Length: 270
Image: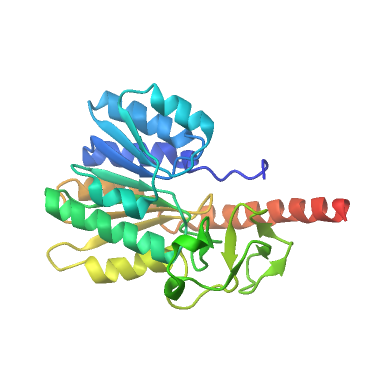
């Protein structure tokens, strides 16, 4: 797994530019892990005289130690859907938590309700909007997903591009740390599906929700209120990256190469 470049921090330039254009001061982050992106968000918040609230029920010890000595950072060790309703005055959301339809759809609904309550223009920046999570649920803690919203899953399932099924102990897999839904596609399955459904539900003529999809490193998504005064500048910055064919080709090649390495490792261990 150390060979896989998967951190949201790979997009730090685009994320920080988006926040700066929107004039965001107070940031809420869902999913911290080691805190690579968190440290950059905290530095940005410090420069803006703002704050970073990081929601993660079980981040790595390195993050916990760092957050405990960083004044502008508040760590909430709860699942996102429990923690988010208690927040206020959030200018932007950076979401990289549990990558499944139920969680992401509800994270967006809660964030939108809080923005409307607090008079904020909606801005959410999300990771894992491309393959493999775009159309297939991923569960860190499947027991937290209500049964009626949870697909059949396995911790032993492996996934490969172009195969809507699964392969036992082959391909990209969780190694006991997370589970995959056993099928790709269909209703209420995957991160991108959740975003599309939320956008269709929440967008209005007065407040259309604009969307940009950067197809690299598992995919970065930027969803924002196109009626915001900063929206034209944000669109001008992000649109050249939206569905960029060169980036998509490079990502496909990256995945093919990485999965080939996994296959070699599996064969060597057999």
